[in-house]
Image 1 (tube, rainbow, N blue to C red):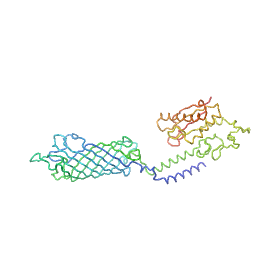
Image 2: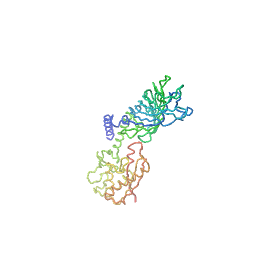
Image 3: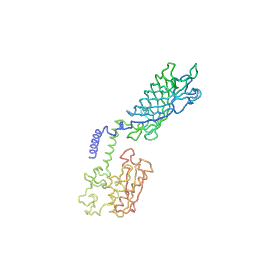
Image 4: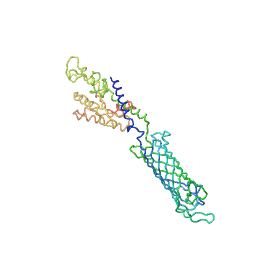
Length: 438
């Protein structure tokens, strides 16, 4: 019968699973898709420059390094591995040392790019805080000259006819972005991007191109922060994503474990706990289909514990059998939900059983032993186990049992159960009882 119930329950679970496909449990679509990115850093106009102008001393690559670029972007991930982003940047280019004529140019840039989460493609561990993005696309930009003077080979320094003029250009951009997640939804990143400009009619110094070269190039090196917003607590770039098949298998595994938990038979009377009206029947006595001890004469004593002389007096209750059940079989347990110190509803009968026993056996004393599963720190679990034992003791004393007959013991973690299954963890979260021998 027990196996028939298990198979029936599993069949029902499979039907429910089929109906719940595509629900909110589907993490394929349950991640933060939107991310805002802000960064600042160094933008270097690589070429072209007019006569007498340059970005800095070419012998020292970083001699002209300075913060001159600001970029704000918005990214949307269509899938966990691929998305798009738009960004708007502002930069200024000026001379940095005495090797160049003085110049100043304002640069605005609008870029539209595809983004690949390379960390997912390369199977980085979701637990890692390291991330990596690759991006590339098109951009449009403008240069506005603020350069007053320019160099003429014949006349020397002359007024720049391009002063206050603006030119527009476009091209391609590509870059790489290593990331480091610093909180659940905030990440620090570095970005290196290269912009290739076509039909750039103005040099980076703000003068007009005269050699027919209608292209330019600039490189950006920046540091920034990205914030992923949405209902999920984890940054979208690091959210652990499972395939639909993995989700279904995990869902079925959880349901099977739930069924296994339901099918537990704490008192070993052959009736699963979820159908057992009396889940703490003394071991070895006959029970009906609802787990109730057979008591034909209705005197409160199971028939198999009645004395052989035919007397039907409750006072003749076989205490040795009960002691054996309490001490050797360990069938009286109070269970708790994860990280809770108050018993779950299903354990009320176990507490009542102990209360009834202590009231009927005035000379008996009981050791109340609290346990916790292995999840969490040992110090937390030790405290939790003791609180569980204390709360159960409080229930018993509030019913009129003297506190001196109860000894509280916090056993801490119970690692004897299967720590890899929900059932094992559930069995570990308990309070057990032991008669104190005098």
